[in-house]
Every structure is written in C-alpha cells, then in structure tokens.
Length: 378
Image 1 (cartoon, rainbow, N blue to C red):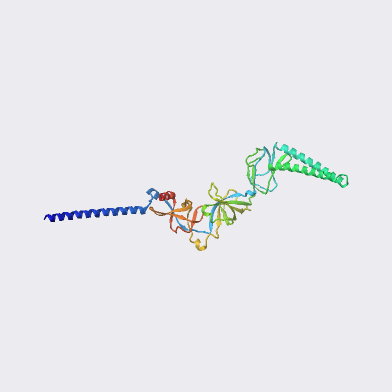
Image 2: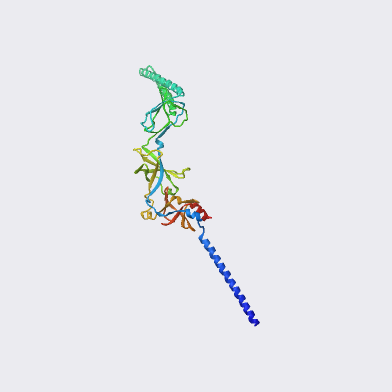
C-alpha cells in the first residue's frame, strides 16, 4: 500500500513537471512568433499620417522621344546695346520712344556737358592744324614738281598732315569712350545697329551723372535666345546640336524651331539647373525678352521603338536624391514599403521616365516621402 501510494505521488509529480514544461514551451513559441511578425511588419504609418498620405501610379510613358523643359526668352547679348553715361551733363534732345525701331546710325540722344569743352577745343585745334598742314603739303608738292622744294621738305609736309590726322583720331577715340561723337559742341549718341528700343529711362532736359543706370537699350529681336533649364536627370540625354521646338502660352498653336547651340558646363547656383542656349529666328517679333516658354527636345536616339514602349513615368515630386542616388518610396500597404533606387532615362519639370526598377501599377509616395524614407532607414 505504501509503495503504491509513493508510485502515485511520483506519477502526479512527473505529470505536473511535464505539464509545466509543455506550458513553458508553448509560451516560448508564442513569444517567438510575435517577435517574428513584428520584424516582418517593419515601419508602420501612424494613423494620422496614413490618412494624409498621397500616392501616384506608375504609368506607361507617352511621347518618349521628347523631353519637356522650361525656359525663358532673352535678347541675344551679341546684338544688345545699353547706353550708360560716363560723364555729367544734361540731355538736350531725345529722338525715340520705347518700342521704336531704329536704324543703324540714327541719332538717339544729344548731351551737353562741361567735360566736353576741353575735348571740343582739342578737336577744333586738331582740325585747324590739319587744314593748315594740307595746304602746306599742296604747296610743297607743287614746288617739288617745279624743282624748287626738296624731297625732304615734301616728306616733312606729309608727316605734318599725318600728325594732324592722328590728333583728330585721338580726340575722337576719347569721345568714343563716352559712347558718341562730338558735333557742334554736343555729344551725339547714335544707334550702333538696327533694332528696337527695349528700355528707356530718359527724357529731354534730364540731368545725368556718370555711372547712372542705363539711359536706354537697343536690341535686335529678329534673333533671340531661349535659355532652357536642364535638370540633373536629363544630363545624359540632352546634348548640344539637338533640335527643339519652343512654344509659348501666348501662341498655343505655333511652334518655334531651333537647335541647342551650347550647353553650360556648370550648374546655375540659384536654380540648380544646367542652362542650354537655343537660338531662335524671330522675324515676326512674337517672342519677347523675359517671356516664359516650354521647350520640347527631340530625342531621336533616346531608345529603340520596342524600348520606348517599356518606359514608365511617375511624378517628379516623388523623387528622392540621397547619397547621389535617385530613389523613390514604393507603397505596398501601410506597413510595407520599398525603397527603390533608379537609373533615370530622362526627366522633365513634372515627370520622371525610367526603364527598370518599377512596374506599371506600382504606387509611389509623393508627399511626406522624405519622412517615411528616413523612418525606414532608421
């Protein structure tokens, strides 16, 4: 009986130990599964952020052989003239209005200045000396032909004429520094080439000082430049010599054709873009300086036809540039995101075109994506 009693006790104790071990084992398994699930879920959007998240679909790209850029019209600096006064005086006459077309050599301004007095005196003296030297040369030439004057005297008379001419040229060069010529004691400013008056800051009778703001500007608008903004994602695709079409909101049905003449080698520090210069023939004067335009760059060699069909597009604002790499945050669900590194085919102001890394129907985060990116990275 006693032996049977101890056997039963031992059996119950063993059973209790087994049960305790089983419970402990089950609890350990449950904890491990919870930890694994948490690791798999990773970062989850907070409820408030999940409500405000904005997404965009990855879609097939259209018009893949064109890159759309923005730009601004400007005057051709080689055919642009600004008159800045380099002396004090009074504008006695103004012969133009803003927007006028002026021909080369047209008198635009007449300026009176005390500073011109000495130059005027030097010019009159040099002109008088020239007349005297020319008369002396003529007389010496006749005497030399008659055998009365020597060859040396003839050479000296010729030298006197040349010296007088040199003095006149020197005075005229000094006047050229002021931007005009001296006539009747007045500085005459003429149009350096044919063009339009694109700015005017002067009226008759106005006093001027050396170094003032430009009094007027003349520009030949029959050829203008368009400075297009080339984004970092376009650098491998936009090249010098490519054909472009320029359009403006003012003329929605008209295209202006041109070619990229020059591509800058450094980024614009303010706009963080590379500037492409495009020369446009503007004989109808439709394009005006400072007008904003759209530029479509033809990419004949961008990709083969079968490759173009595979290009995908998404909004440019979804792009993240980190560690010199282009990346996007792809949304799967509120606890499942992918960070995808991309090789851009080309980029416009509003869209990015890629060939690999994404698939049609993917959703990319367009707002608060930097916050999500940083949380995932951490």
